Image (cartoon, rainbow, N blue to C red; front, top):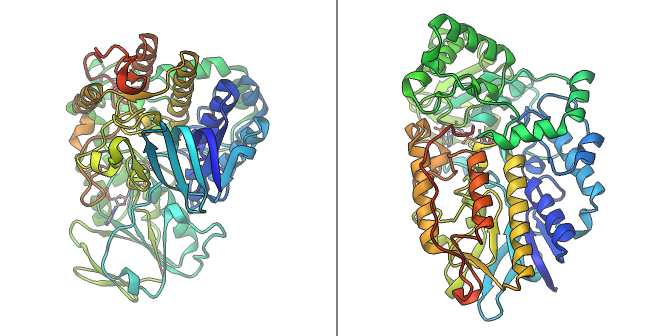
Amino acid sequence: MDIEVDALVVGAGFAGLYQLHCLRDRVGLRTVVLEAGGDLGGTWYWNRYPGARCDSESHAYRYFFSRELNEEWEWSERYPGPPEIRAYLGRVAEKFDLRREIRFGCRAVSAHYDETANRWRVETDTGDRYTATYLVAAVGCLSSANIPDISGLADFAGKWYHTAHWPHEGVDLKGKRVGQVGTGSTGIQAAPVIAETAAHLTVFQRTPTYSVPARNGPLSAEFKRWVRENHEEIRAIACSTPNGHAFRIAKRKVADVSPEERQAIYEAAWEVGGLQFRATFHDLMIDQAANDTAAEFLKGRIRAVVRDPQTAAALSDIDHPYAAKRPPIDTNYFETFNRDNVALVDLRTDPIERITPSGIRTRTREISLDVIVFATGFDAMTGPLLAMDIRGRGGRTLREDWIAGPVTYLGLQVPGYPNFFTVTGPGSPSVLTNMPVAIEQHAEWIADCIAHLRAKRIDAIEADADAARKWGQHVNEAADATLLSKAKHSWYYGANVPGKPRVFMPYAGGMARYRRTCDEVAANGYTGFVLGLGGAQAGAKSVEFGAAGGAPGI
Ligand code: NA7
């Protein structure tokens, strides 16, 4: 089928849904959304592993554009789980009548820019062909699963699963010997729940990591009322913090308080739980000595909880500053290692050699397994974009153009790809923030930009190559101004995927500052973008981003 639309959006998660609403209902475009999954939800459609839960607190994990929507929706727990998030998105789709524009079970496989027609030609795995003036990738940052290439996997006689492709009908782990590879945010959520059902769980840990208790629980009627009545205040905080969460980062520095006060502050934050721990001091992410104090506190907690000294040492021997890699939050993760049916394998001293038909063989032993769970993360940020065959001007491919790492202007556009936008693309704060807040800002900016083009009868917008180069430098400088640059083996640098270029991908300058930059760019006539084909109506190209630094998100 050949279908002509004004705008084509790829992905029906938080980003695609809101982008559809903005483009169709605010700008008035004929818009279609392509979604590979069988229903709404994006990451929450696919991630159904045991213990899956959002790390953002529910009162801020939502759209803020509609007060009415907020009044009609109540989260039940402090951190929502996938079924409740899917129900929320279902409610959004129903309220704004979004489903009729979404084609489920339809994956965009290629998107080629036709220079002569100034149109995007998109093909799907269902054989449909779309032609669109505007193409928006709302494909998510963490949607391309990273399945490690460990020899022997094909011969494994048991079952194996990646957490991001968990079977919708669930997996019965009762009585099974389970091996879990990976101890990031996902593995830390999964292990305690798997251990409750499985006969035995072996956790294979490559890099130990910090974790703070999530302290999940049902929300009180009083809190729910407070959320309903304080929509604007919560929104204002989430839009003004570097991380898009609805809590402020303390202004004090670690050195401003005595060691006793510091200890009391950390203990109180530990009791509150969650990502707010990162907000205890202003300089945790910019000063190594300050960070060391938080790191020591958290390592001490691991040693206090885990009874076996060897296991405690392996779990707490952490080699990077706190929050320099994505900081997980957990429910009884370290406590799980006190169970009789749980064991830890430290891959730094005893690496995996291969998978055998009956389990995993490390350098020193063979561990028999019925099930392997890969909680091994994602080909983050660039993976979902590069999975499509995207071609811009002159037939150049995005894969060629990003061979040394992603090149974007503001994480919104790529030079050479007119009228192609990315929601929370590489070079934007994205994964360092509470995602819905970053998504809302991008979707609105893109819609306003397209409305501007149409009002002024401008046929195209494209990132200027020089502006993108400068933005790339700024993204690097912003990371280097923080301790994020001290964990070069993080997925923020693409280090978890063999062969991936080591480039810091998200923007660490903070969401609030980034929002101001995007607003200024638009207010000044889209500086750094070329407006109109051939640059006849080029926007002013001079573009300054100020000094890097500041408190990054988490
Ligand atoms: P992460 O944070 O990338 O964690 C993946 C884990 O898997 C991490 O412990 C990795 O160790 C480990 N891993 C990856 N590849 C291997 C191989 N080949 N062998 C052993 N261990 C491996 O992904 P998550 O899904 O936990 O979290 C992603 C985001 O989702 C999270 O930040 C939230 O935003 C939600 P490594 O640290 O690379 O040594």
